[in-house]
Image 1 (tube, one colour):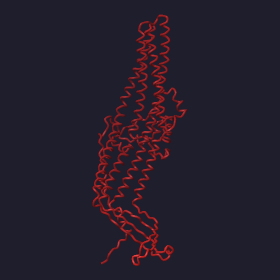
Image 2 (image 1 turned 90 degrees about the vertical axis):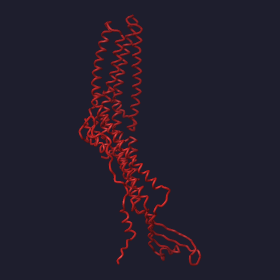
Image 3 (image 1 turned 135 degrees about the vertical axis):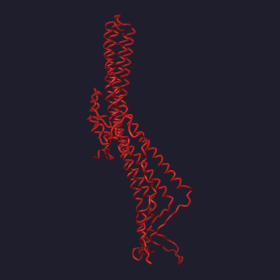
Image 4 (image 1 turned 45 degrees about the vertical axis):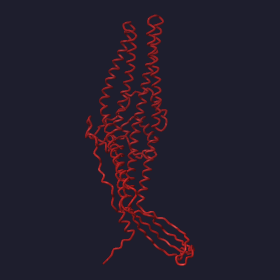
Length: 470
């Protein structure tokens, strides 16, 4: 009867192709409606559109490029990828043997004579190579790979937020400049009115009450101007933080006289279907990779219930005389295979499995929340589009009516038909509406930025240094 002898190396290769206890991964159902309430056609326009095609203002493009090169959050996210890649390589290397060269020297009583005998040995050593028959190391490698891919998606998500943040910051600065211009013009007008009221009071054509009312309005405009100057400085500081450096002098100078009405139009984006978000949004893809990693950790925890099989081998020479170690020493190859079956460890393996299952449940909830958050962001942006447009139209019409009302109130006051209170009320209303027109226009533009971000657009491959890899 023939017998087949399997060498330790062949056995190791056989065992490396062992089983896996990772549960079969199934993507959870998206916990959102099949379509947006505002409708939309299926499209991946936002994800495929480059930010340079969407934000066409050359100054804004320059700021975004500066932020991509210098922003510290993006730099941290890129370096996190390198760290996750190294962790994956560590887990992958654990599946392969570690081979080294070892030398030993010992002095012990001889078994035959009882006298002390020296023993010297040197050779190659394969140390405790775990044969992954039950897939523990493979599961840990799959977990590390998913975490690495999640860090890649995390960097893309940071990039999307950064591009949107710079765009919003730039639009806010332009709105600040327009509001400051309105406040300066209003203050100048009210100071002129105050001077006129003082003159009229001195000649007896106006009362002290009229003068004090004019003074109050002038000081209110001065306070508003100071408040807006402060906000302008804070907004510039916030944009500088995103850029990773101060706002360039030439771009700061170009802000003078900015009007939101002159901001280059952004392209219309079809919203698509909620299912598109699963592939378009980096943060959702990141959450799914984290779920895959949590799923793989269950495989590693299950494998811990089975024997751990390791291979140790030595090949070299030994001699009782150091000088004869490579002359008359005896050469030998001694492989050793050992298996350890866990019998009692106070429930540690079961607790590890329970923790892994709870971790997967947490990852499922986080994945579903990421989808729900994305659905809400898109829905909010879609709902705001038409309503902000209607609000802007109505406020512009109201501002035009208030401007005409102010002109008529001033004319009636000059002719003694209306009181000065009517004129002041018209001034207050027009000032408030002029500011509201700017603010709603800013909200419109920022809503377009938000929709672009919510649909997953605005990222391209960037190297760890922050430079475009394309």
